[in-house]
Each structure stands twice: as structure tokens, then as C-alpha cells.
Length: 118
Image (cartoon, rainbow, N blue to C red; front, top):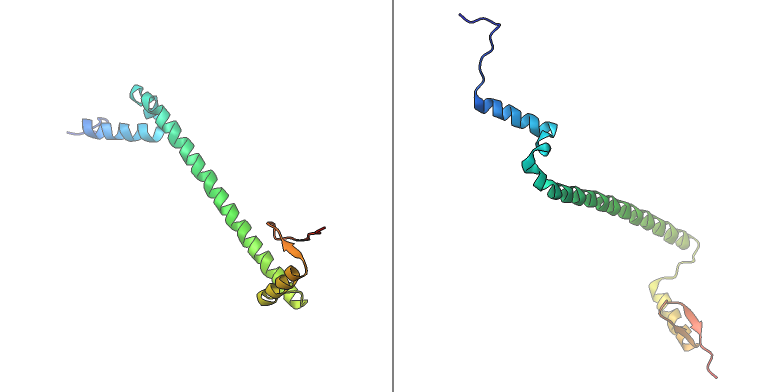
């Protein structure tokens, strides 16, 4: 006759699974002597994950900055076109040729300067 006051014996395998799961979820496996040699690898993994998170945030912020700059560029171009201050590429090339003919020389910073020859 079975009573409710007696507990059924659990199998050793079932008990080990519960113990291993509890150790894994509770972090007790880190205190095991066998795991001490793995500490440097866990630390390296932690550092790599940290670097990954920082790089992802950096990439996202750079993408947002690029989008903002593109929007600003489009607004500026549209304002220049409205005010007739925008010079198309073909006309720009003609102006550059005229400036070169008048003595303006283009330097590396794409700024024109006048050279005085004596």
C-alpha cells in the first residue's frame, strides 16, 4: 500500500540532469575546480562580445550621421536651385577653363589661387 508521506526514489540519471541544469542556470558550474582553467577563455569571450556591441553602436551612429548629411545636402541643393545659385556640371567645367585661361591655378585642396609671376 502506498502512502503520500513516502517519496518515490528518483533515478540517478534524472537527478544528475536536474543538478546539472540547476548548476548551469545558477552559475555554480563556474565555482567548480575544473572550470577555473577556462576563466581566461570566458574573459576573452566577454571582451569580444563587448567589442562587438561597441562596434555595432558605432556603425549605427555613423549610418544615422550619413543619412542626416544626405538630407542636409538635398535641402541645400534644392534651396540653391530655387535661388538660381546652382551651377550645373557643364557650366562649371566652362568656368574652370575660363579661370585657367585667366591665370587661376587649381591647387590640391580644390581652391583657386592667383599666382603672381615676376
